[in-house]
Length: 608
Image 1: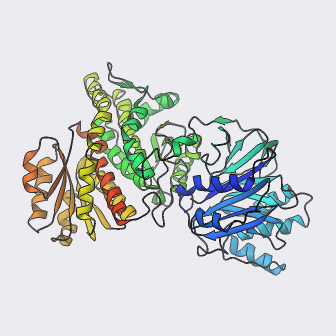
Image 2 (image 1 turned 60 degrees about the vertical axis):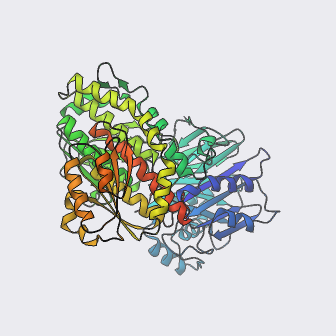
Image 3 (image 1 turned 90 degrees about the vertical axis):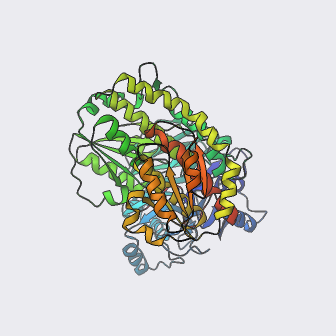
């Protein structure tokens, strides 16, 4: 959430351009204001988009270093005065910050008593004043920053700059991601690698409780107690071009259309189809421990949690292991019953979702084996779990997750195979699943060929005020995922519902103006889904059905139908969610909304 970017160099590059371009590549994270500071030029801030900030930047705004920020408001409204960067009383110390300073009120009160005057209503401004106060007694900017950070409680990813030492920038991390970019005569600080990649692929990920200092010629890392740290350099294996739209109107459409390749990449090198086996190298180190677990707890938030719900059905059917799915933000406040025979599995695209990260940490404290299904290499959850599987979905820029969801479902199916074959799944069953997995990319392409038809349906239903999504068993979770996509993109009230639960409340809403999206593939739940559709039609509710190719009977019952190819029941969510993603996209586009950056949402939620 929010976005930090900082640069210092002696290469002749204009820092202002580097910083503004970097902010553009961070826009996908979600924000409501933007700002930039350069010691040689001053600061410019603006509510709204980076484009608005760029308009305010004067032509003579030049320098060799600076810090920049995209803010998503937590403390204080999204106004110019509350936008980052924030300065101390003297205007010499500047800071950008992601996270929440939990004790900012008491710190602010103490600083005000010492004569400090604050301009904003944010928690962040306290950091700049706190460093200013410590500079009165400490011998250096670094020591003052360390002293200030040791007084702070909460979460932060920060970049600090001192006007009197313009070449040096300090970064620190506690619960909010920070990555360093290592170039030739230039160094970078960012919330994630995307703004760094046009300049260098060499990065270093900070851990919680670590502080870094960058200059044009190098970097150093140390802990909050000033102990020096050595951190290995990571070479990022994707480039900036992958984060471009590739000719599509929106990132979201590009990412939906990448679905077949995403599934192929998630499967690559992981299937031994002739033996019905899944090879997951990231789990080899804990394979024997996995054999002893008797319970799995899946922790995730939002779309990832819906992937987890589908995974629950897969695991229990194919492995016999009891599974629970817990929302990360609630798991933190329970007293979960966990022991060394429990595996806690985190599912997260960014690998930085704070609630999911804290759930993993709670699992570790209680002795569980911790696992991750993560897309972002080098992210915190990828590093802190005992073992895991990378999605290999590539960068996902649009705030609404689409291709990551497909990848998560694919990896969950692989994991069900991996565990199942170790717990009695037959080779024949393994071969059947492997064959069906290999067929999925081409079947997704078949669904994507119906883009124009789905766009026409979106235009037909675009003026609906409400929508109901229903499904059963494996497609129970898909109903909720379809609903969340529609509401987060188009702001239409949409509810996901287990079709069997419909009669316990949601059916009261149905009338001729309340359409339903019904997931009704020809599987073990088909007859029951047909009964549920009849219940809706009896109340004059319009119905769009997601149905299996060749099912001509359902077309006689519903108002509209989108056909998908047949596959194994456990894999059907991977196909059935694709038309729901396209439908939500086209409804939002028809309404003229910002599809890639829905209001009030952020890509990576790193605050509570």
